[in-house]
Length: 280
Image (cartoon, rainbow, N blue to C red; front, side, top):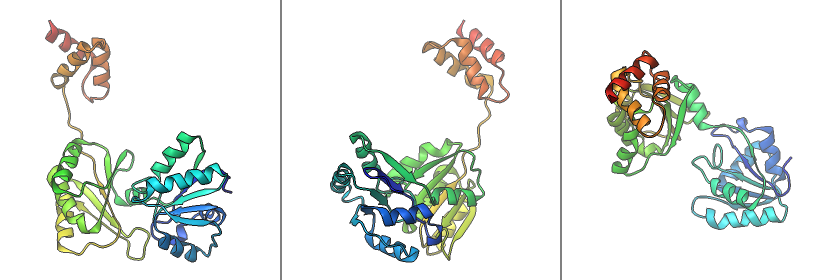
């Protein structure tokens, strides 16, 4: 049950309304104030779920967050049960909600979450790319120069990377990724997840960029990109870093041990001895 004076964020289905949780359905019916990214999308969802809402419904999106957050805080102060939902997935994750969470916590109001569907995790699980360590990068910048600058430092990222993208920019973004990460870097494009026309296309970034350029990309898009392969280093490659850490105040032996621990094939004693000789 929703608690009075508590801000609740609820994940909504990313495509198939049958993925709605029982808690979400109850929360929609119990909320005194329901803030929705798109009230029309909310109306379609509650109709599909056969849920009757009795609370006040307001729009809450990127263009009115600042103004509407004050409305949410006033409702919390009055002891109302406040619920935030977005068009799909979890509020605050590349969607409205973070501003409200920060404001509520700063004002001392409790915040809770009703978990549920996630486009990030759904695409990651289905991609066939290592899911054990990953980073969520959200939407790349829209402009070509800014997008290239944002992708360039990710070229050496060893964790799997997950991006959101608009269908009309998917081809350009995949081409930029192929340029930044290499055409052979493994990736997957997931579209229309959990919907009737769900599709996951896997291949190298160059191959996917060619695919996107030659077809009309439709639907909600998630791009999963494999991380960079670790570059093997030897003691000679690491000795300058050991000396730099020692110059910054770390014990030479500790620095050598820590770097050797994360560098397969490099022994701590070997690295330490080399650093001592280099420093003499």
